[in-house]
Length: 173
Figure 1 (cartoon, rainbow, N blue to C red):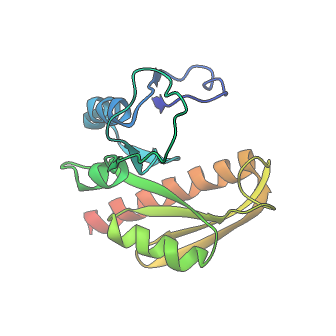
Figure 2 (cartoon, rainbow, N blue to C red; figure 1 turned 135 degrees about the vertical axis):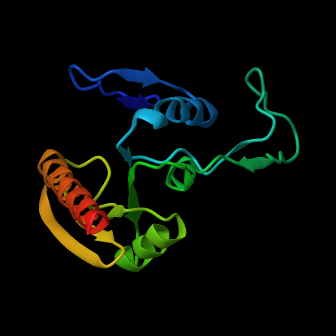
């Protein structure tokens, strides 16, 4: 199941998709699917803030300054990680500096099971097919190396399965 905001990508064939436009719609769609989820992968974050009072039409230019009041959007990833029962929760951290340190803080602050971290900037990350990824969890780390985003996604899925199995084995002991 895929919950997707406005993107210029087609959903993968055979994947049931819910299209949303706002953070509130995404939160509602995720909450509706959560009871049946074994794994939640928060591959992209919604904006942290939204306008407090969206204009119903285009705002015309006028003299003087304009102030836009912003309010925080819900933190869907943290909410999923705090849900009971909860799925295995995977987040992402696109960082411009101190990639692993910032990703580890996010992992801990949001109580995630795994976080996939990569550096972004003018020469890496967004809008390029090649990337590199390091994955962190409570007591570990694995560098998935470099490759196409499809190759890294395959490696990440394998690691998610491995870590889920390790968690189940620890619970069964």
